[in-house]
Length: 380
Image (cartoon, rainbow, N blue to C red):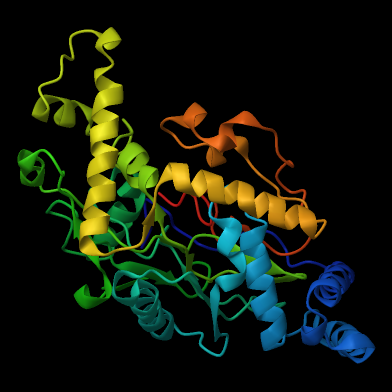
């Protein structure tokens, strides 16, 4: 069977040579020794790792190494404004699980744990790494939760239907998880249990008619199309989440013309003059849409940041990292919010370039041919 969209989640690159793995491992363990001496195994650990790489081409991280690496990968995420909280990420070590059913089951559990009754927890679930001669299963989804009618989900919705999915005929239908166990293997569908997906209906604090639009969005933005790379070892299936920034939903997901394109609808609801761009009807509709998102999540008791508060916290993060002598790799175009940019403090300065920080990272190596999403960044 030939699939017309997103046929494989396996990169075509060869695994790194043992020498490259050893070099990356040395650099990572030296960083661990500097930042977390209690989690570092010393010279004996270096000898163990070198011997394991010589024998197998790779090595296995300790729990302490995995936890440190995952957290630092978030700290290094140049497109994320919420990195002040990097050291609070909860790390689930699921490296012993490798089947599609186990991965799907634990992805649903990830959502339950992260949701936490609305008090969202930063969380990563790390499944088995790739090893020389053995690729572990992949998730083909962009996020654990996405809607079938979202234009960004077009290719995955098409693939799910090719695989026999009967959903997607209603607004905001949640896509199933899609796994693939090996190159060329037929992907599998796994429906997410409804109780694992918390959604927030959108209302407006001053416009009762807004509720009639029937809009909603989900609570946990869990990225799953990025690989976690730690010291020469790649974990291709490692879904992770923080919590939403309001503008990610209100300004981008619902407002962008290539997404839900709702500014004309909101403008009509608020009786704005759309006949001339100089009335700033788009700007006014954008503010009302973002106000509705912030209001709705607050009313539902679901964690969400606003772009003004989070911008100030990001500068606190920079100051804190400077005291440790660490750079803060930053992509200005992603850190500055998509509305009221110049009204936030992150607009008025320069930053360390992306890639400036040493150590672990999230990369788009888990899937081929994918545009950058936002993960620890603008999660969308």
